[in-house]
Image (tube, rainbow, N blue to C red):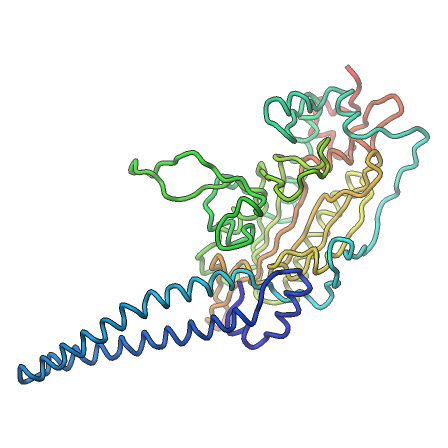
Length: 441
């Protein structure tokens, strides 16, 4: 969410951002509605002032005739208010519906592109393994090693369902413990946040495309079950399952006035993640690449409203994820995300992709985004600087490590000709008996 004053003063730059981010929004319409909104509000304020003046006049009236005139004039003002207020409410509703669609202006170094094909590779790191045998896919490996059951997963959970089993379970939990400990070592406070949350957290973090949940476009699960409040009354709050810990972590700071001396605040969250994949039907139908639920360790930073400081924080977050890819022995590449593949609220974004030899392609294993104050304005996250000025914080997030996609990369990169899979050395301390290799039963 941007400040309307900023939008008015930077209309041309906002229009360019709308175009480059492929957003269907007529900014001129928004500005026209904003003008009507301001005029309608001013009219109501004028009527309110007139009403107060007439109330004073009635109290000061010395005769019945004077009082009668004031009463008649008051009735006329009341009738005008009765018409003006609902008109203003409707205009304000139109204004807010348009405002939530306004994107932030991306950073100057963000490449301009129509879609993901416009993302720019910054560099590749790690040597891509050359096999002296035909590498198997993670699906073939998982099934032959009896560490994932896709058939029963689909039977019990439905499309994209799966069971992690045996060493598959242990390997994923080792990944999560490794990532969580890495984050703590780097100064990020560990949190297990709620995964069942209210809509304001998802709207505030940008996971609703509009002001409210839309099942046709939002990659979110809504809970249909009736809920109860503490007093036993039916809850009127809609609840949702998170697709990442980011909304829960950000909402932790909502409506807070933070102390600048305590910034930046670094936190990491471990959580299950649920995604409807509503817009990705037909993509990666088999295997673990695109599933409805998984685990993830997420980084969130609350920074001062300083571009250079927040950019430095984004680079720090990315560096940690890169360090984990390197320690896991996974070849990866860093991509800078272009405008056409960037969400409305993102100022600057990067992805990390690990090489998956069985699939013979790169696969996204992390994403780092700087939203500057776009999310903070929605969630009302502020801090007070040394001079006592109140400012919206800059908010950043990054995937420290998800569960299933790095699992794909490990199975496919560490496979052996006999069908076994070597456990990356850095994970063995988290495996029972410091297990070195997963073999067929």
